[in-house]
Amino acid sequence: MFNPAKIGPVTLRNRFIRSAAFEGMGKDNAPTDMLRDYHWSVAEGGVGMTTLAYAGICRSALSFKTQLWLRPEIVPALREITDGIHDRGARASIQIGHCGNMTHRSTAGETPVGASSGFNLYSPTFVRALTGDELRLLSRRFGDAVRTARDAGFDCVELHAGHGYLISQFLSPYTNHRRDEFGGSLDNRMRFMRMVMEQVMRAAGNDMGVLVKTNMRDGFKGGLEIDDCLTVARELEQLGAHALVLSGGFVSKAPMYVMRGSMPIHAMTHYMTQLWLKYGVRMAGKLMIPSVPYKPLYFLDDARRFRRELKLPLVYVGGVSRGKDAQKVIEEGFDFIQLGRALIKEPDFVNRLARDNAHDSGCTHVNYCIARMYSKEMACHCHLSDLPTAITRELERLEKDQRI
Image (tube, rainbow, N blue to C red; front, top):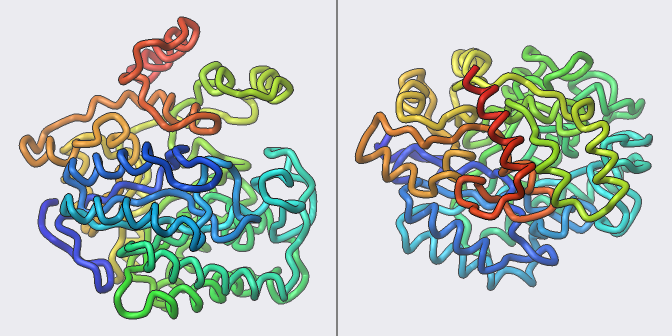
């Protein structure tokens, strides 16, 4: 776990990577001191690399005002973050992507766009299908984002091609109903991904590492299953990706497939400011966000098949919060481990693990940190002393359910 390893041209001091779990710590789509301090603390806590999450490549890519919009104006603030990460011995990565239909006009500056026209009930919003010319422009914007990331001092970029965001919306038959060269067969549905990868790899050159987050399953009937996802992964390998992050799930259809467990609906709605949304989610939240049982290493069974069939470095993510789970992942042949909730609970989890390889972060996976990220900055409930009684009771009930 603590041996150095490479992602393309970039060497990490160990096999631990802070996953691109959305921090919700930006302001007006730019970095803040809070975002800087959190990633500095994770770097000081021992990871090989920390990843700034969910940076949009252009305005139409944005879902939240607390999300980064990767553009030249924020390079100086990002450079301060990456310099501090490097000073603490870690590498710096930034996840780049486009949300597709997971946004609203007020945030995106236009009608939300996607693989196909329609109505996204999850947002909710009408969606317009992108034209071929717009897709060519967007692919170039991905390349521009990589060059901006280099200017900001990042060692790697992580291209988001999963979870039901734009690239994933083209890959999945659930969201891609096109009849042109970007729809129909899986080979056609991969066309936009190929265009993006060509631009990303060209921009990365020989000095930046490129990871791609990709689904192993979409997580619901009618989405991509493992065989098609393996085809996508093989294509990414051929296109030159330096490493794949193996994930799964679809934010608009199977959100808890990504993280497992239950969404604390009362906690989630407590921080919402739009009354119609607050009470709508309280009434229908359990139907909109169904629970998926949590277990340690919940993606491992599927990930083993990818390990058998692919040669490039693979990053395991999903249910690693104890030392024994991290050790098992390495023993199974995976090159790196991404950590999310364990590092929200303990930013120094990796240093603690270096001192005691049986260390347990103590994360109870009740997902309070996820519930509040839609409205406020990411935080673990264990670090807060002023939670409302109703939220405390909800989390206690979910913790009890997890133990059962």
